[in-house]
Length: 85
Image 1 (cartoon, rainbow, N blue to C red):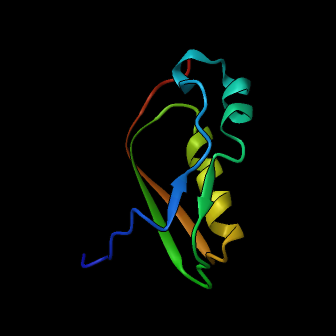
Image 2: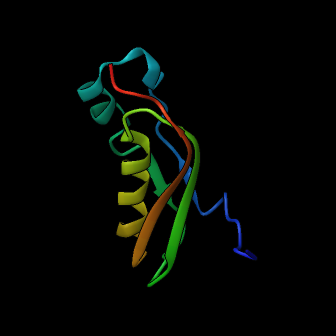
């Protein structure tokens, strides 16, 4: 697809307990503010690629961070999705 891959502009800067050990609502609180973008991303269309999505808390928080940095559109591309219990 010739889509550039950037895995350095945004980083996880807040280290938290593993998401797997937390209940659904706790995961969203746990990951809040965990990412930071080092540069502005004005008008960019961005795809986040993840192997497995459980609750979507991490993907949601990263997408919010990218939009705060100026991204116009953020999509989450996942390989697998865990089923809710």
